[in-house]
Length: 154
Image (tube, rainbow, N blue to C red; front, side, top):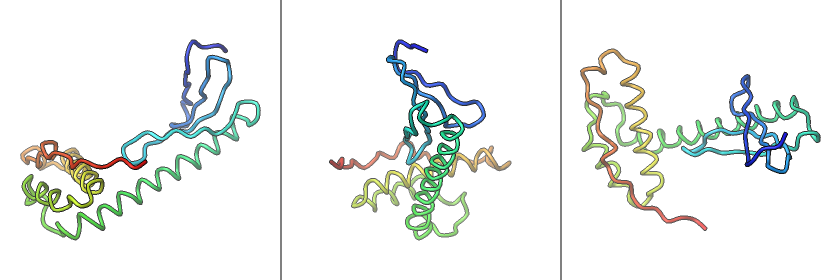
């Protein structure tokens, strides 16, 4: 099969598993999942060198490893940053000013501070989706909290 540019065909039965076809006709099996808010794509092998079933099995292992890393990273943010500061107050008590102050006090660890505020925003959004009382409740507007600039590692 020839294509005009790199094209990926995704497996309908295994999310995150697909075959990438290059304009040259080369076919590579890939796995893709999200880690740290970014998409991670791993090449598993060339079609013909490994079978689709072998690649699908590898993809499952790779995707599970990426998801486990994501869960561990989020748990570290919760245990190391959120719980020590906010502890156990009711969700309704924590407001934007609290989250902004929390963020500002972590200027020395900008990446963790920014990721933690994003995680807090996701936690509030999930709460609003799941609980009946959320319709009358206004979550803190964390989008208006400016991110702390970070230095890129080289």
